[in-house]
Length: 476
Image (cartoon, rainbow, N blue to C red; front, side):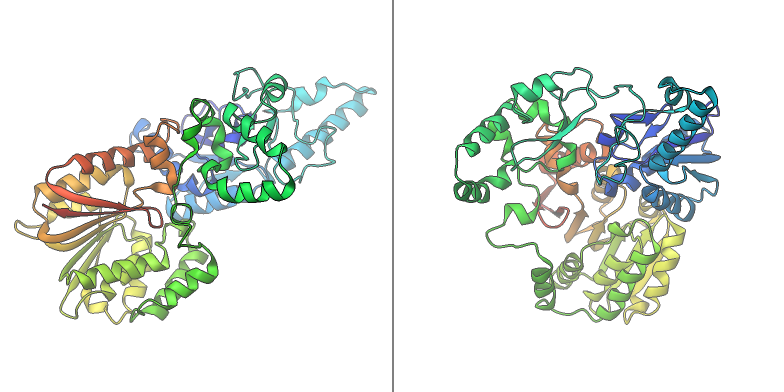
């Protein structure tokens, strides 16, 4: 693509991109699709920096079947204000059908079969990663588009386009593995997994079941499909598998992360005055906004309300409002003479949130500010303090928020400062432990933030392995 004002995006996950792609596309650096929107924000920010603050004039994108492009396209138009968005119709799957038709037409025109015809027409190189068999029967080799081998074996680095799941069923991580390494490692991703595979093969089915039940959480990778970036680290020592990133794994003796228990816990916790309004807000956000996963968990909302009530906070600040769910929860914890200010840079989501604030029994206590968090903090008068501050905004700015709040005495001496997402889907602990790529910018920023707060003599803190990680900070 010669026009630098046009952005071409591969919106698939990294393990799909590594074996097949269109040349010149910008790959969104994600392990799972749920990370896409945060990564996309960073790509757009970088594009604007390189083009004098201008958004892309056109965004062209592709995925496997088109579904992910629909979601990303909606996000770009509704949330980022980019109207010229082009999607590869039907995704790579449909493009493969097109190639087959073109190849057949070319062969008919030439009067004989010519394997080079497909190569001549195809702009996509390598294999199309297929995880649901939707391509079976479409091509002689259902995944192969061209014979280009773009990937590399996760273990020896040789050219390889063949994905497998680790033969250690307790791991099951997805990796690229050549035939030689498959033989040497018995289909496992590391020597440690190979030994587990051998050990379990010597057991009866009943023994295997009991063994897996006891050992599985030690081996499960934080993101199974992201295993290839961890392999070199994992093969160094077996004890690297002892990783626990979520409450359902680390506290599995007392917490069973099931919908039944979630409902039970929620219903056994004190109701909020705006419970019905919060339910409607949650449903409408899910229907309306591409980034609905940014909503805090329902029980997390109750905890935030409880913390405000327990600390008897009079003045509460939220940085990062999104569609207003956490703001309403915070407001529900206030005494009726308390106040909440919530700020967010996005005008569209703030307008949406305001419609729900207006319906709240706490409407008169909520002030919504459409402004960047740091800009709002800078606008506050001297001696202005808050009793409770909840930060759920740009993760890479957490240290900037933290330092500004402390340096300008914006937190009351007995106040509480809370940061959300400080474990970020297990990626922060993986990064700190050397088990992830340095390209994971959000994980790296949060790991550096957590380390900075831990070493800061001005405060005391606790990082709670609840939901996506909560860091609670108080002044010493």
